[in-house]
Image 1 (cartoon, rainbow, N blue to C red):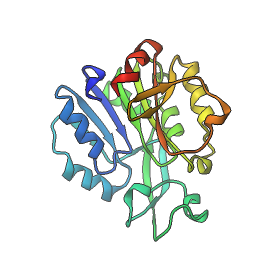
Image 2: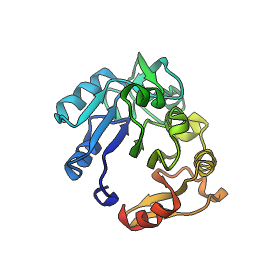
Image 3: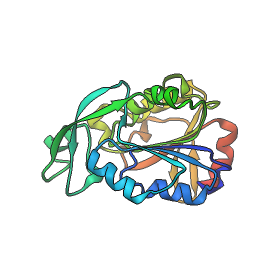
Image 4: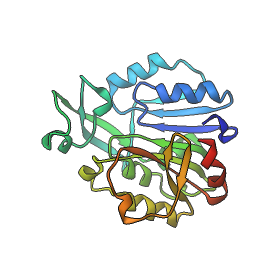
Length: 218
C-alpha cells in the first residue's frame, strides 16, 4: 500500500475495528480515509481504535441500494458477521448470532454527499456482499475515478451467488485488469474457469498501465 504513490482518498468498506485502516493512515500521511462499519458495536471499537482527524468513520454499510436490512452479528467472532444468514444455516459459521436491523447506502450516494470525485484505493471486505457493494458505486467504477480496487473472494461467495467471473465481467468492461494478491505482488491474468475455485484470497483490479507497476508494488 505504501508504494502505490500518494494516496489521497481511500475507502475501507467493511472496516471492522480498523486494523487495515490504521496501517493505511500510518503509511500515507497525506491520506484521508473513509471507513464503513455497519454494526454499532463494531463501529464503536473502530472509533476507539482510530483517533485521526484524517478519517471519516461511518456507522453504515455500503450496498447496491440504500435501505435498512437484517444483519447477523456474530459476538464471538465479529469478523464473521454478515447480512447472509445462510452462512449459519449451511453450518459454515457456528455459534450464537444476533439479528439486527442496520442501515446501508450506495457508495455513489455517499460520494455525492461528501463531494468525492476520485478514489485512489477502494478496499471491500464485507463477508461475501462485495459484488453488491461494488455495484453501488455505479459509474464511479472506472479507472479514471476509482484507481485501484481490492476485494475478497472465497467459498462463501456461493452463499451470495457472486462468482469470480461476475467481478471479471463487470470490471473488465469498465477498463480494469484483475489479479490475485499474493506475498510477492499481484498476478494479473485473464479469467479462466479453473480460477473459480472458491479459495480464500484477495483480488486487485487496476487499469493496465498501473497494473504493471502493482505486480511488484503490493
